[in-house]
Length: 313
Picture: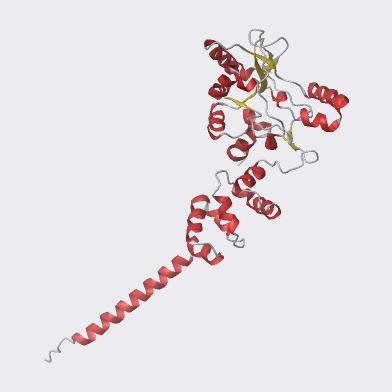
């Protein structure tokens, strides 16, 4: 019987060939897998590494898939870096940027999110009343003439001037606010509350007859577009006091610091008239609930901004 000697050379060659095959196969598989990643696909479009990181952190997989259908645009990631970026508005952001090249990315986000670039005279929309206390009523979004909350009550003269009405759902919060202020020496009463569609129609007509259509539109809401109709908005004023500079009054400062704790916001705050459509109002509050009021207060945003990002996103 012949005993063959073990061929170390052939074994070495076999090991080398097998290693090459394994390594090549691994590289092919790795390369295939890499080509399926968003990193690779986005890099083909033209995005740089830091941009790809931002995209992956900001967008869902389905949103990235849609983004891959678009050409590279340096403005996309810059818009995406803004706090209140909403992907569904991307094409609108980009279109607005093309027409307004000097506008900041932050302002573009705000303008498009709140639809404040839309001419509300001819493009009014229907308020989504299913949102309840978070419904949006403004120059653009309106209520029908038939809309009326089913819980409107007369406010006691202990808390309001005679004839003021409000939604019963927020009465406890109003009382809590007024009593908290009273404990610190401030006396507030409601001076305006719920108005029906027809009430607002009469008020607007009165302004129109006195000042003309354009001036009436500047200072008053058209019927259906007043938040008073929701029963959630009201004016709250110091009792028997008036000020030349009301925002320097201790009552205003107390409201500014505390109204949010009871679920209320200043509906028309300073610096937001281009969004809300109204000049700032010292005593106009709106109930939105404690979660929304805390965010609006801490973020220093108006209700249109909150609604776009947190409610209608």
